[in-house]
Length: 109
Image 1 (cartoon, rainbow, N blue to C red):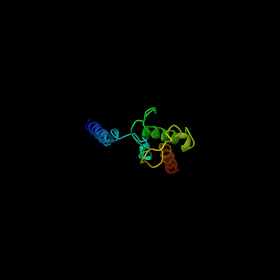
Image 2: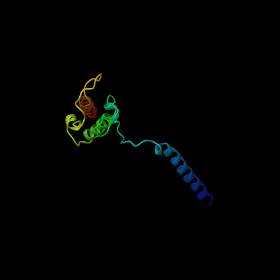
Image 3: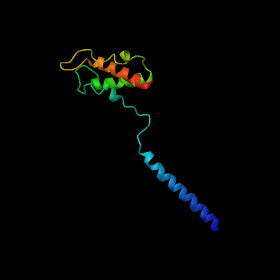
Image 4: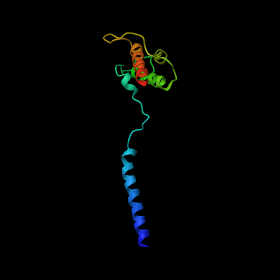
């Protein structure tokens, strides 16, 4: 009887130790989350009339398509972004997106 009690106590202690060691992992972010925004950080986050979403959000969606293999080239992924120059900006939203897509593909390899 006493041996059963000791065994039960050891098993219970092991289960408590395992549950406490797993607790930090439960609050951790998912491992498959991607940070596409780092490739689009130079894009504007202001809405442009007539466009669906901001240039930043369009770029992030393009990076996701590119990473998932839905499209082969950065040019194809970024086709919906504006090709008009904005005063004081370097390049167009399209060209900055293509540049970010090329970096994404480089980092992926």
